Amino acid sequence: MKITRLAAPKDKKAAAALMAASDPWLKLGLRERHCLKTFSAPFRETYAARTGGELSGFVVITMCGTFRGYIQVLFVSPGYRGRGLGEELMAFAEKKIFGRAPNVFLCVSSFNKGAQRFYRRLGYQKAGLLKDFLVKGSDELLLRKTLGPLRDYSPKKRKYVKN
Ligand SMILES: CC(C)(COP(=O)(O)OP(=O)(O)OC[C@H]1O[C@@H](n2cnc3c(N)ncnc32)[C@H](O)[C@@H]1OP(=O)(O)O)[C@@H](O)C(=O)NCCC(=O)NCCS
Image (cartoon, rainbow, N blue to C red; front, side, top):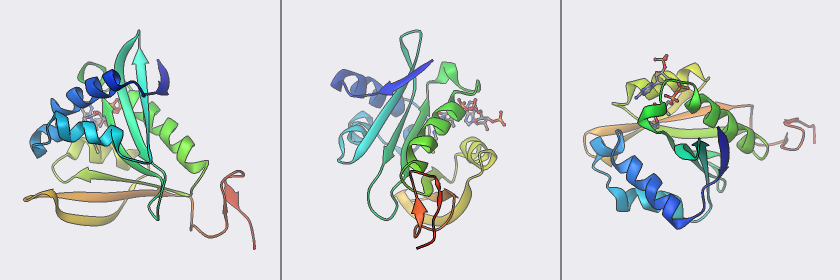
């Protein structure tokens, strides 16, 4: 398995089609055209995992603003789930983010219990609840994994320095 940039428009389209055909996006009524925006919005970094040349998963991160270090999307293709690939993609994203900021944020739908268990296992904690955020009747849990406060974080050293 290799993780590289997901940049080609045809790869972004293929990734959006995979998302739109899978929960939680299916349940949320987000179609391919909505999912495609995830890959083209500004300040997004998109990375794909390929297994034997096939797109087996992807992760999209945003590195700007107060909530820099936000994981916009984590997806493992159905045939590859439950084999540790999600964890590998998270480790990859966390390495990228902690090299620049002390927090990783993400949202998970209230009905997506499997993913909630998955993130809890990786050390994520609930930081907030966004009621009816994407659609009415479904909330988004804001999760956070942190190394510490923003001030004094030295990304290069991944540690705190006294000012
Ligand atoms: C959640 C997800 C990224 C986990 O990736 P993965 O490669 O299956 O994860 P791992 O093999 O590293 O870990 C498996 C864990 O994921 C969780 N999981 C969630 N949905 C799952 C699914 N459809 N199939 C298998 N495991 C799933 C399980 O809790 C499992 O933990 P367990 O073995 O303790 O039950 C992946 O299942 C996925 O892409 N699901 C659909 C999209 C999604 O929900 N993304 C997260 C949006 S916030």
